[in-house]
Length: 386
Image 1 (tube, one colour):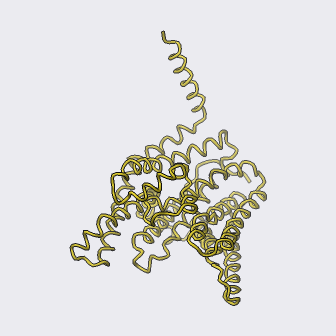
Image 2 (cartoon, one colour):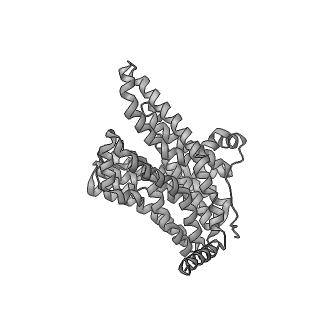
Image 3 (spheres, one colour):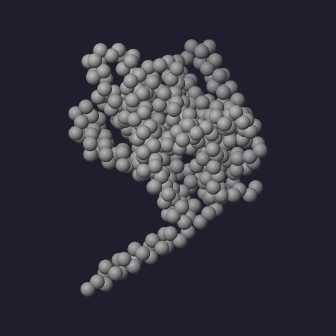
């Protein structure tokens, strides 16, 4: 096994990322259509993709000099600028909008959790004033950041691939077990629903497991991913039968369903990478899907607050003009989608891409010694000025 630290690019995964964000937008913007009720699974696809891609990078670069430092710098450059810019704009502008006063007070009261990427725990432990919070969707981003806060250290410490496999499977089992325990202690209330919804590591773990299997032996990944899918699905089906036959009121889907969905997407991700099917490859690498995947981070960040603002300021006007509720839903959803898409494209090319271009410069060997030297020279020049 001689893994290489060279950059790898999987064009088909851009297409899958595009599908993921379109599923999420369908669920949020077009939830008045039954077809899109299950679009929330796009979040699980994001988790699997993220787990795979990040773990793939970590495994290939963990012997590089400055491994941890470079990982966090690159991650920060990708996530932090747009995330913190949106928070800053929110705290500056939200007080000026009367309709957002309640949620502004909520976020202001818990601003430390907002700034520290703890939005998932904020929603679990502090009741939300309503379900139209402008950062409501960012719980998933917080969950990812918390996972990656510790994941690089585990990959660095657990050099033995068997030990790393055990760690991933243990985290996966812990995620399932925590949901079962939360249901046992809290029942089916809203707080428990949020806990089960906002703490799932299943997709991240399964994506990481696929990447680890690829690192060990790429030729066996497809078989292992299929076995994993069959095993998890079988356990879920058996649990469902026992619950139904026993007349038990256990929410089997919230406990095992996320794992089953993640296992399906884990297999799909690897199949998309490995498959030589020309029709599938052509579909996943189509210009529309790839470009949508390219701007998916900005689109994810923008689509929800834009939708909430459109609903807040357009619904009453449309109603006053005699437009039906159904037609209003279509107008608002499509206006929000188009606006978020334009914003995300502008954000990517005018802001995000420029920030991302600093990755190689900042992580290049010699950058930090040079930076320290320049800071030292500057301080010395200031101190010695007469």
